[in-house]
Amino acid sequence: MTVANISMAQNGKATTTKTTFSRETTVSISIQAESSIIWSLLTNAADYPRWNSTIIAIDGTIAAGEKIELKSTLDTTRTFKLKVLTFQPESLLVWGDSKGQRTYTLIKNDNGTITFTMTEKIGGLMFPMYAKYIPSFDEAFEQFASDLKTEAEKIMKTK
Amino acid sequence: MHSDILTSTFLEHNRQLKSFLLRITASAEDAEDIMQDTYIKAAEKISTFRAESSLKTWLFTIATNLAKDNLRAKRRWTEDVTDKGKAAALTDKIFFSEAMHIRMTSPQGAFEIKEHITFCFTCIAKSLPIEQQICVLLKEVYEFKVNEINEIVNTTEAMVKYYLHTGRAKLVQIFDGRCALINKEGICHQCTELNGIFNPKQNHQEELNKIEMAKQANNPDKEHLFDLRMQIVQGIDPFESSSAELQLHHYAHNTRVMENFLKKSEV
Image (tube, rainbow over all chains, first blue to last red; front, side):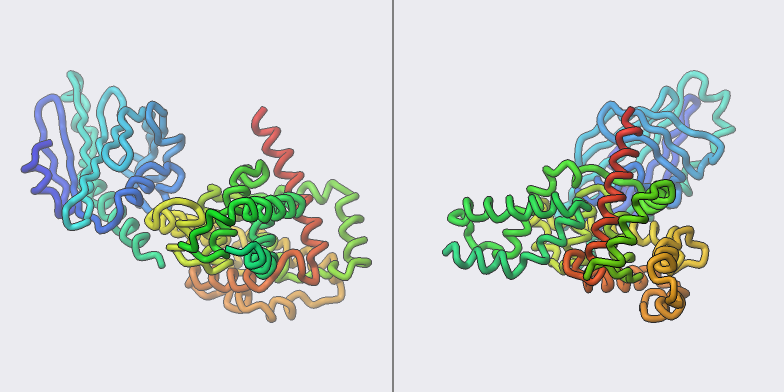
């Protein structure tokens, strides 16, 4: 993803770019919370359904090399079996399967906020055959980012 | 720092520390052992105390570190621990004969619904990850501030806030789903059922009317109901209360039940 894309999407609005063999959706949002809080929310599998309205369940442990099973509101009939591919605490998390990858990045800003970015790229040689069956991610991505911001900022206000 | 000050501070907070340790371990014996180890360690290390925190906070830090190494503290229970405890008790004739003996003979053998609410909170809080359990206890029961808790558990303020928020949210959710005192759909009536067994002549509705949390059961503000629950827990010393012996007997029972369950789960 380019710097231009990140800056375009920082308002919590998702953007999607399509090619013949792939599709990439990105959302980015500024969060007023410590990166450790955002990271903890992103890596506590069992806790997702409590704060994230787009996730029905995540089973497993979100840690380097681990396998997880994810059910989301995007397709309630399917369970996605994914592997955690990159796990750099408070910075970069990637999980995925043969068809796509989801990347989460946290960037610390000078003003103390964190820029959270989530990108999912799906594709491959067979992609044109099933592309029309995959729903748009835009709305769910925007909801995910909004839920994360709300929850992280609420935690920061804990007294 | 003079060791006399340590001893007097230790004695001043002795009851709080001991109840804190019971609530982490759910074992009276382990709480006693960790108390003793806390004093010994504090006496050994008193020359290193720099008064950057209060002596009370420092003592809780030592006790928490020792508790985190305790096997019973480390073991995580399940949310339905009270169901499992009940099922095991119903098939165990000894449990009720022992409990009834305590009820009839001990000066600390009374059964009170409030005390059982406290017992229930301790058992269910053991289903949280240990960091969440400790932070919730320190904040909600022992009224430490966030900046004191992060010293006690040796983490950042941000992480303490995370543990507090997620731990509390999880407990609110569990009690809302389970506790029939606050939710008509709740599946657990154990406190009123036991009240019927131990206090057969009492009208349990009258007893519930004495409990503010039960009186406000229809309040949709679940956070407020949780605060009321915490007020009950704060007000009861599990070693000194009028039903201490009976409740400690229940703790020992649930500990056995959960240890057996966890052992079977590992196989």
